[in-house]
Length: 305
Image (cartoon, rainbow, N blue to C red; front, side):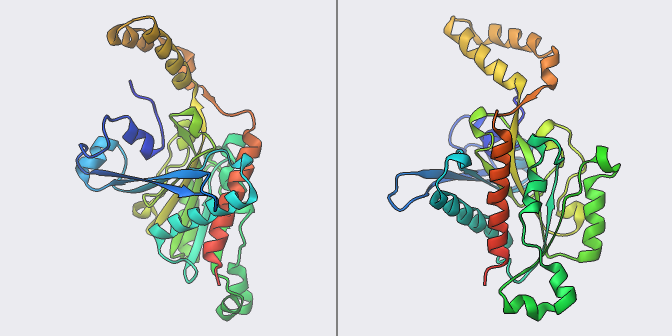
């Protein structure tokens, strides 16, 4: 039975095997150490959808999807946090190339008044914006101090503005002419353990509203006309997924077969629980910390001397 997720890695995990048998899809995993003593590490997975057959199998656009399983960022030491920030910057630049000589536009999607949807605005709040210095002092000013040219926007959501995020960002792109657009948004995960503990970076852009299944017009190179990098953090899980998992485990332990379990769960899916989403009790602190992490990483790679 389908469990919705915005993470390409979780879609890949829904197939059996190690990925080799899915034509047009590759999977690579590696461990990255977060301390000098090699005691703590995080797993970084790269799913590449290479062609149309891979796209059809995965239900996602052709491109690269990098998943960093950071764990709980709230509990990290300062050194671990800095190492994750550096690794994130490295992974972003693996998709964009070096950013310090490019014009960067960051779009933080979401509603800052809804905690689980406020990641994008949090990131924008933490950015070192510099585009206005170019207008006032010239490009040589930025080069003198080792800063790149960055601007940002938090366009809100359609219920607030009456406009699609794509419409707003396309208009901004027409005026600012960035080389790269980085779009940040909240996502939905399949696994509870990945909520606010995972970062996905992709060169395929992003769909606003993904986190609550309210997909709007996609933000990607095709719709915007400029290369778009999507950075997403899952902040919610469908309530139905959690309930199904627990019931499924219990029914298997009682000796029921797959057909019996499927029939029961199919009937259950007709209830109102299908439209409910849940998040963690410390989501406010987690989103703020993740926002700090992503903003710090973008600052570092854009303004590196």
